[in-house]
Image: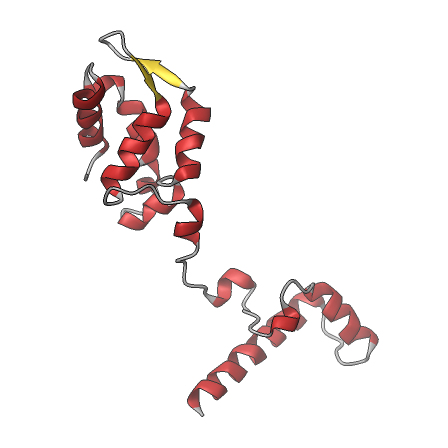
Amino acid sequence: MAHPLHHAESSARRFGGVPDDYQHVHDWFDSSKEHLGLFVHRAQKHHTVGIYDAERVFGRSLINSAGRVVPIRWIGEQHVREDCQGRIPSLADWLGRIQPEPWMANGRIDNDPTQIGSDPRAAWVQAVAGHQTILGFEDWLLKVSVEHVQHRQNRAAA
């Protein structure tokens, strides 16, 4: 599906009424195209959490122009299935496929399992207390991040 109107027309065929009965729901699902006009915009709302968010935004159901009560969840499931090759992914399906970039983690990605969940501010305080740095936190974090990236590049080049 390329446009929310096509989803609304599909809803009208499936649930009765006219496309305008459903247009606002489908516009909401595709509103992330305002930020990114590529299919990856779907990561924002095209999943199980997005379907339940739609229900919170629009209520549990609507009454179409034919007088039929249609659950918002059905409309959301239809929209997501039409855009995601018949499946309804979870939010984890989308987020788990994001390729981590250094900027996503303040310029550093810790591959050291002992550092997972560590507090960089606590490490900085320890470095200051141990006379290993006189840098402020932001400068120290940048320095450590650059060193980490350089170390990874050197390992990859070797």
